[in-house]
Length: 580
Image (cartoon, rainbow, N blue to C red):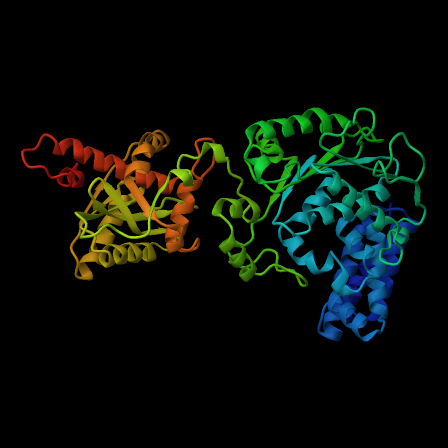
């Protein structure tokens, strides 16, 4: 426990700062207090408490004196080949934190010899903190979580961050051993080489400064294993791949690290392979876990590209649903609130423009899996691409009628959807639409009115549920104000939308024809509508169903109208569709 004298001294430092501000003398005193608490008096908890405050006052002093952060000053120092004592003081505090299981400080300290542009962590730190990745990794060390699942965009640095974390683990827990498990022997070899380099390359990394009493004591490159510290039954770092004979060969007492069990899209589309990979994890990888030297259960970190809801991470989430000790970090390319890139790193980052370019060259479903962290169960699709009818040109002559259907927005992420369809014979060509999830109701009304007027829509039915009757009235006002008359009605819908969508799906696929993909971009409303339609699956629990719902309501309206028309003396397939 920290001494009374030390605690009193720190309190005096704070009083001094209140009166005199921050200067180098009080920074020196704080740095010495951190060292005294953590190293001399062995009160790690108090030492880390004041080390956090010490870093804050150093950062404040640096900004006041230089106009930039410690990181800014450090980049300048490397560029100009000069040294600053304030940087060394800051790193003396980071070193103590790195030695005492502070993940962020370990990552910062271990690369401080490297040129700033060559570093992995600092250029990415701002984003990693923002998305909660560092807090999650710290939570694994602090025993807040037992399982951590991470899915980020390709190239974000998922596996590299795991290498740094593994290098920290074997230093903090030298009596324990860890297992890295992946789909490919090539991946495991790269991982092994990477962790080994971090631990042994003294020109690039400072692992030996953080753990001066430890070193690599044995290696087996063929088996992709190396040990740190004293001999133990299994080495500190072990790597193996799916399909290897692992019985008796590998074990994990501290961390089981599972990285991308699925090798690619072909495997993700095959339910048999998905089942086999789950068995490999549950029956093989997970059975390598034993308790650590403190009698605690081995923890797990899973990193993967989420191709399928039935992948390992998806099944873990289902099994442990609601368990607060299972943490998930899943971050899309673009922040939905700020509309900025979540991965615009300081060096070699990913801009919004990069993602837009990637999206142009990929099918929407693959893009959403890779970049949006939205895994999809492909074999359960109700409206698969190969069944959807497309058109490049409308038939000759004018349409028999121009009609529309509207599904109004409810709460949260629901979409306001209004497709516009032209009838030619038995087919309905979807020529335009409104499809957005904005919470700006005035914008919804205006967009809907413009679509109706611009396309010369003659009739439009609104779903009455969730205030649809009010929406219909507001849209009608704006349509009339623009000088157009449209027969706008509202009607209640059935509650069991899933059954209705499934029952109507065949009619929709047979009678509704959509634009060719070359006629719209993924980001425009029509592209968004088609994406939501194609992604709808009978297998998924949580999904956006507004688009298939609006088309199923349209199908119900039209087929009801057709049935009524058959008993009329004069055949008019649209009259009943408007009123019944």
